[in-house]
Length: 241
Image 1: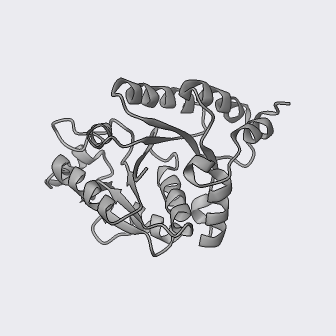
Image 2 (image 1 turned 45 degrees about the horizontal axis):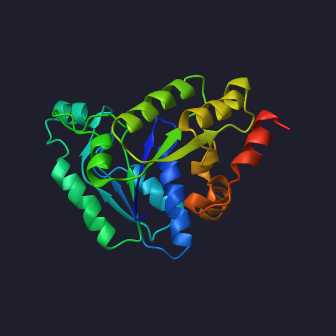
């Protein structure tokens, strides 16, 4: 695995923190890691965006590539239209990922919004990029009452397009999970037809680098470079025997 797509089931579920966690673990193994973000929306030029958060959390050695930025807090296609700027070019996006693979041991593509959010008026999406480049997909889910439904729709899109699902990570697991969050664990594993790939605690993006790395390692599965035990998490989070 040299390239991986990280996509959230919606806005604010922790996809960028999961991306930073994967980058942090890669760097701790001595690997070269590049994070590519096709589009940053909702911020003007010069403001610190998602990739700045990745560097702050994972370390200065992570390389980052941002292809487009739009000030309006909209989907990339709508933000480009509203600002009068050119939309993300699909060919340039694919080239950036392939170019990054030549100089890195791991390339992480940090999608904007969900899998089917549009980058241009012709319907280019993160899903299309993953299909074109055959990128395995890590889906980051939230923990609220809408999480199972949002995850189901994302997983259906993954399956419909023939994408390779690596698994699901809970991006912001609450410190005191309620009955909705606790029931979500079984729901997500049933939907994905496999154990969870990880669960990162809410607020992880505010930690210092050392704490972030240790928590990332504990919160992501061995398949992603960590030590997360899905069965143990299921028992402690749901009260299973």
